[in-house]
Picture 1: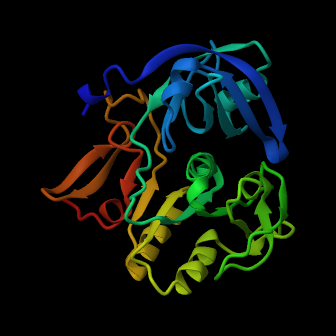
Picture 2 (picture 1 turned 90 degrees about the vertical axis):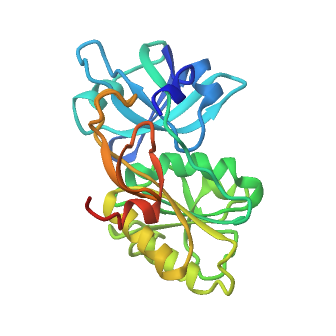
Picture 3 (picture 1 turned 45 degrees about the horizontal axis):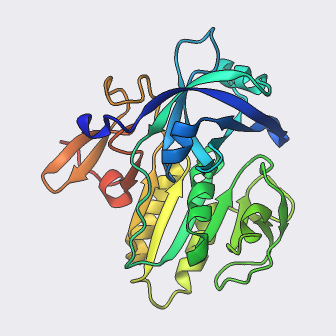
Length: 287
């Protein structure tokens, strides 16, 4: 697997184009990096050096990429030393970027009805995937316990099994039906978990042979999505979040247990993933 990634991961000095501050200490960082932007896919990430004073890189999922203009977007929240340095970056600053890394989402043509779920830090790859699949009209559900880093507006696209309420304006403007959920009392959002919304949507589908689930978020949410897949007989693709040191498969510090046809095996989230089949990751037996 390590050899399979040779020639596909690039080291580049990326230029900060914009650092847009959003609510609750969140930022959207746009960087000019032609090699990464040309090859980034929904689910891939970059390993970013946040500043000269920090040797360790931070893995961050790509939220958008424009191949023609050579830029990509990252969404992050200021929580520690690394993201603190990123929060202070300004236009023209340059940061070392390693990427794009990882195996992204692979929607099945046989299952064109796609339900996408993003929670908290798992929102960026779902935005990327939603916009990538916009022509096939996926349904997008987002959950957050802090204010969303996007404009919310009342949903304008009806969808069976989903309540009316706040939707992500950045997605509905592209014709993608979306809804938001929160247990923090955010105005207009569904009061509950994003997986509660998913259950309502799946429950009214008379034919689920054409449905596929995609998700990224904290582990409890991903476990719940995998369980929904088992309950409703729908496959799921889940993007995992793990601590990473090298980000290129060398240190094996991000290993997870995965069930394979040959039996349980340890896989590296950075290069064997970060996207895995939900049933193979959550429910894998101990070797």
